[in-house]
Amino acid sequence: MRQVVMIMVFAAACVSSAWAVEPANRKSNPQVKAVLDYFYSLSGKTENRIVSGQFTEFGNGSNLKIMERIHDATGQWPALMGADYADFRRGSITTKVPNAAAIEYWRQGGLVHIMAHMYNPANPKGGGLRDKGVDIVDVLKEGTDTHKRWMEQLDLIADGLLELKAAGVVVLWRPFHEMNGGWFWWGAQKPESFIAVWRHMFDYYSNTKGLDNLLWVYGPNKGEKAAAYYAGDDFVDLVGLDAYTDFLDPEHIQGYAEVAALNKPFGFSEYGPHASSNPPGDYDYRKFLDGVKKNFPKTCYFMSWNGKWSLATNQFVKEMLSDPAVANRDELPKELFPAPKPGQNPVILPDAKKPVSGVPVEGNWKLAFEDNFDGDKLDSAKWIPGYEWGQTHNYNAYCDPANVLIEKGLLRLKVEDKPSHDKKYTSAVVTTYNKFSQKYGYFEGRFKVPMAKGFWPAFWMLPYPQHWPPEIDIFEMIKDDPKVYMTYHWSDGGHKSSGKNWTDKDFSYSGDFHTYGLLWEPDKIVWYIDGIERARFADAKAIVNEPMYLLINFGIDADWPGPCDATTPFPSYYECDWVRVYQRN
Image (cartoon, rainbow, N blue to C red):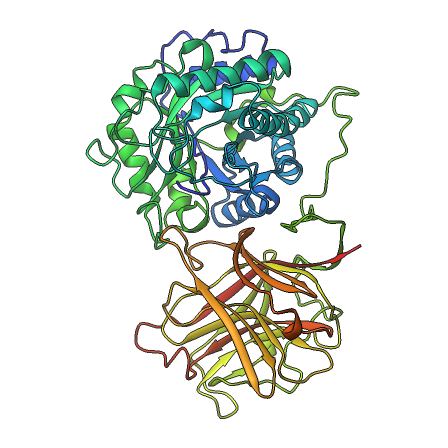
C-alpha cells in the first residue's frame, strides 16, 4: 500500500523440510532463532500452516482496537500484529505508542511486525515520503547533511527497536517496503544502490546497535523486478509480496515465482482486497485463502492492511480464520513467548490510550482536553448531545441524543431516514458548550467520515459564550465530494470568510480514519490532515481572540450538500476515535 500498510501472515509450503536455519544476523538471540524455525517448520504441514496477521495503525494512532474487533466478530485473534513507526504529523519517527501495542500483543502470545514509512533524509524540511528524483546512495555519503539526517533517523528507529528488545519482543522488521515501485523516495532505484543501503542498515543495526531481536523481511510490491532488490541470503530472513487485489492468481499477482525462488519463508507482507485505494469493504475473504492455496503454495504468512481492507471490515472472515490451514494466535507455540526474565524489561511502557503529543509544530505543549470514548455512554462532564440553542440547525434533521452512540472505543453519530420534530431525518451532534472552551492552542481529532449524497459531517468551533461569527471549521465534507473543506469565518463590517479545500488520489476520508488538526495562534490559523499542513490563514487582525468550544455534528439535506437520493445509505455513521486539545505550556 501507499501510506499506510499492514502485514498479513499466511502459511502454506514455506521452504525446505529441514528448518534448522541460522538467522541472517548470526548474533541473534535464541528467541529469534525459535521464531524463524517456526516459520520454516510450516513447510509441508496441512494444518495451521498459514499465519494470520493484521496491520493496526501508524505512529501515535497505534492500538489493539482492530484486533479486538476481529476477535469480537470471529472468536479468533490474528497471530501477527503490525504497526508502523511513521509520524506523519511531523514528517519523522515515533516509537513509544506503537511499541506499547506491540509489547502488549507479544505478552498475549502474538507475533509482532514493525515497519516504518521513513522520511526522506535529503529533504531538510522533514517528511518527503513521496519525493521524486532522490538518489538513495546519497544517504551513505559521509560528511553530508543528507547522511547526517539519515543516521539520525536510523537512531530514532533503533531506539524503538531496542525498547522492544528490552521487553523480550522478537520483531519481524520490514524496512523499505515496496522498493520496486516508484511511489516512495527509496523506490525504483538502481538495485545495486538500494542493496548497499539495505546492507548498511543491516550492519549498523546488527553490529553497532546490537539489535539481536530482528528478523529481516524483504517485502517488494507485486509486479516487475520483485526479486531485483534482494540484498542476499545473509541479509534477509523472510520474504513477501505486497498485493492489493481481489484476484489471487498469477495474472493479477506477478513476481511470486521470483520471490518464492529465493528459498526463504514466503508470505503476503501486505494484503488488501480491491486495489490500493477506496476498497468497498465487502470482500469475501474466503477467496483470498482459496487463491493462496491454489496459486501461491509457498505462502506461510499474511498481513492484512487496515481500514476497509482489514479482517475487521470485510465478509466471511470468521470462516477464513477458522479454516484448518490458518494459524491464529491461539495456535502459535507457547514456547515462542517465554515469560520476561527478572530485570529484562526496565522500560516503563506508556499507556497505549494515552497520547504522546501529536502537535506538528515545535513548542512546549500540555494536554488540556482529551476523550478516547471508552465506556458505553457519552461523558457528560465533557459533552452535551445537542447545540447550545437546541436540537436542530441549518439542515433537515432533528438531533436526537439517542443517536449519539459510544461503541467499542468510538463515538458514533447515527443518521436515519426517520422523520422527527418536523424534520425529514434524525441525526446527532455533540458539543463541549459550557463544558470546555479554550483560547488558542492545537485542536485535533481522528475521524472516519461517511460519504453520500446529502451528507454534511463537520468538526468545528464556535465562540464561548455563544455568538456568530467567528467560526472555525476544522473540516467539513459534503455529499459524495472527496474534498475536505477548511474555512474560517469572521466579522469585518459584515460576514467574511476564507477557506480552502484539499484531496488527493490516494486519500479517502470515508475509507479509513484520518487525523484532522488545527493550530490556532494570535497571528495564524493552520489546518493539518494527518500531520501535514493543508491550509493557512494569516491575517492577524482578523483572527478570533476569545475562547471557543468544539462541535461534532452529522448534517444532512441542506442547501450546500443538497438532498439525499436513492443511493444514500441508511442508517449511516460518522465515527470519531478520539479528540485532543493542547495548550502552550
